[in-house]
Length: 332
Length: 308
Image (cartoon, rainbow over all chains, first blue to last red; front, top):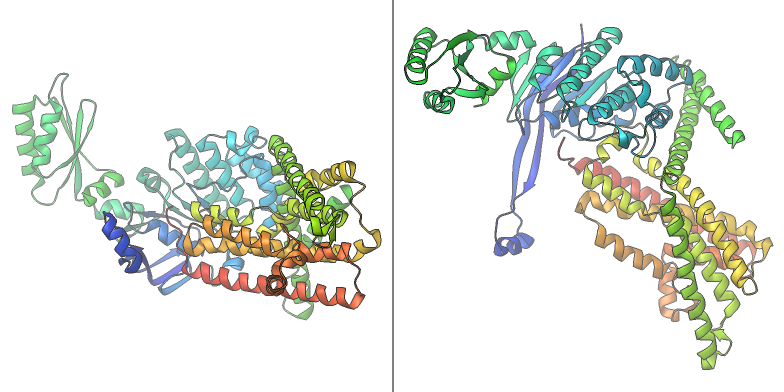
């Protein structure tokens, strides 16, 4: 299958003005400003196929949002080539945006004071959706995103999760070939994230819509994405299936220590951190991810022995970590 | 407005039909496509304007308060003109050669136009740039200027109904004896008013575009607004400026927002003079429009939208 998105040595550099503390520096900067250049995308290449759900992952500043802005055509690239659905997103923006849907998680494209259906009507007109198509899609999307009673509420009265569902439904009214979602799960509760994820999966299955999503919620990425692109400092660390990502980082194992009530879990955590294990505390449990390749059995045995002796360890498990834990471990 | 709605519904339906038959190559299909696109673009703009009007209805208190503010501004002018006329000495019953009646009429119309065209587009554009919401505007298949102008038209109509007409009725009630307009000159006034409307938009949009380069444009906006008020004849008719200053101001386009349209109503002029004035005003407006397009293209090439 031909890729619908093709990026070749894609490059974007930001020129950022430096501000140093002190009045003297501020005055000097008026005459001689201090600029630095930072490569947000450092010559990355990748393809995304028609019908894929691709997840862009990475820590803050990794380049995910910059990449989305280049993909939707609102910023020009500094180098390389980018073709989406056979078009150059920036140079052919007005024509190109007819074929895509874009949702920025931190910005609402709904009319704040008017009902959701008013926003939908305006969207229909702007994107030239015929009345018949609009009515049919609205019925489908109302069911898919459970919008029923939300349609006649002013957007400002919606919760964050409801706003996001409405915003995604709105851009789907024009039945885009490609849907771009930039951090759509920000601020959503677990139930809303789950509902959004399920709706996106159903959408992809029903209409073969290509979906590109950035999210800090790696559980969502792991759950719905068929392709994962992991970015770090503007470069691609990994590009493949979510399953392959877990396999590739499969040498990692999650160690789960369960302690009895009253045990000094903080001290146990400090002990593990002292041995280079990144840990999280969850109630009576202490979890850490270790690289299993380098003599894992020995490491585990030593840790368990120490934990039992000094911190009254009750139970111990070795498990396959989630993608989120692997990524977190890799970044730390 | 059933007729207007029916017209646009028909336009929308026409677009739908043509949209389905535009994939074939050839001159005829291409013509259809262009026609369909134009009609769709027109319908989109109509809906943007209509939505802007609906948004104003969400906050009726704002409408009432703004309506009250304009007569207050006008009262200031009225008493000022009366005071000038009463204490002017040399000018006797006139103010610098202009009769009290002419000045009252001038300021009435000027402030009525102001109510319609002063919409703060510059601030709206700057707010989009500063918040990063310009990203949302750029993923619509409507040009940024087209989107803002469609809103400008919608709000202009709303402001005509909310402020312009009631204010005119109020002024006629209060100063009806002083306000004199030749109805026959309205035919020439209307095209001048259209030019004034578009030029006011282009100027406000231009100031808004400054925010793409400077991020904050409040001072530019404030200073430019003062210049426009002065150079357009809103505060003082250009004919009352010292001749040298008036000469300079008449070389600028701003006079076409207030001074020229009002002069058309107040002063007799030959059709050729009116036509040439109209042509010059239209040329200025077109030049501003083209300049804005160029600046926007440059702005989009270099602008960085930070954040998600």
